[in-house]
Structures are given as C-alpha cells and as structure tokens.
Length: 300
Image (cartoon, rainbow, N blue to C red; front, top):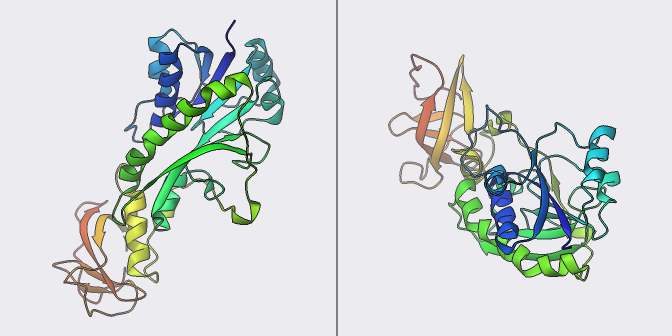
C-alpha cells in the first residue's frame, strides 16, 4: 500500500499543493481545513474544492488538539502529515503520529518571517525577495529543519496580492521536487539558523491604521501590503474613516512639501505630510455618508 497522507491546508497554496498530490495519484486519506470566514474576502481557491472533486473526506474542526480529534486523526493512520497554509497550530501529539514525519509549507524564506501572514509582512517591510519553504514541523511555529525552498524577486510597488500570485508557483515546485523523498523517508534536512530568525504574528484590520509619523515609503509599503483584497490602510478623521487603497510616495505633488505628520497639505490632489515629507493619496474611500470635507491644514 502507498503511504497514507493526511493533508492539513487552506488558501490557494493549499489547493495547488493538494492538487499536485491528487494528480500524482498519492494516497490522501483526508483533508483537514477551515470553514470560509464570512468576514474575509475569499479571492482564492481552497483545497476543499480539489478534495471534494476526488471524493476525499473534508473536516473543518475548530481545533484538532482535543482528545476527540487526536483519536480521529490517529484512526486515519497517517504515514505522513503535510500542512500547507493551515491556520492553526498542530499539537506535538499529532505531529508524532506519522512514521514519515509532519511537514509544513510556509510562505517565506525561512528563517525570516516565521508566523502568520508572512507575505503581507514582507511587503510591509519592503523586502525585494520572498519565497516558499518546506520544513519539518516542531513545537515552535515554523522553526523546524528546512528541506527545500524557492524564492522570487518582487518589485517595490507590488501589492501583497501580486506578490502572493508571483510566489504561488514556488510551493508546487518545491513540493514536486521533494514529495518522493518525503514519502521514502529520505528527505535531507538543514537546521535553521536561529540567529537569523524573525517572527511576526497574525494581522488584524486595526493593524492597517496609518502612523503618519512614519516615512512616506513606510506608509506606502503599509498601503500596498494591506490594499484590496485585504482590509486596507486607513486614518480616522473625526467620526469618519478614510480608507487608503493606493498612494504615491514620490509624485510631483509631494516634492518639496513638508508639514506636521498627518497634516493635509493639499486637497486636490490629496497630499498628507509624513515624518520625512509627504505622500499623495490617489485612491481613497470614506466609510461614512456623507463624506466629510477635508481642508488644508487639517490633521488626520
């Protein structure tokens, strides 16, 4: 009998990696995934689509780290666990079940950007290169030995969604290179360099609040990291919320402009002072009706 694979996954990365296994004819015994969040914009395929097309059982428990779910998972007799963009921590009792180990596909070039939303964080920090890493799962998040990784260069104006779509094929390439070794128990592992590790937690809509004391480039990076389909960058003006979907840190309207951070320097075009100059807000939306009228000198 071929090895029994238990797949934990979500998002387009999970869909594409599960599809690869099914195309190869690997023995996937079940998918453990998440219910779609009604408050989240679902702009990607999920692995549940691929699983149900092939008659693979799909489970969406709130937590797998309960005695009940540990028993159910043990009853599936997995030889190998593969996690791809599964959003919850998997406990060590489950990780110890498969004889061929438990492995995770993470959306960064580990050891950088361990944790949640790595692509958004990388864009926010202006990284020129991102990637996907296949590694052994251990107790600490994204800290296990690396089997393989692949990266791509991204431009300084790429949004998080654009960066995600650029790096997406890397996950499938890495898994295609390594799945036979994983199933044979012969994958080569390289410990991560802990001195280079960085960790970032999950992002919430509130994290899109603009700190006008930052540089124009920092604010621009925040905007492109959380613009649509993510919740967006924003600034509150009295009782209203100004959503900023795009901005320009070095447009003709910003050059030579200075003011107190958050001060409206121009209304048409809309230019706001930053910690080191100014930024033009080129695509905005008021989350209130009627929209308040901004004026020069007003503070955001």
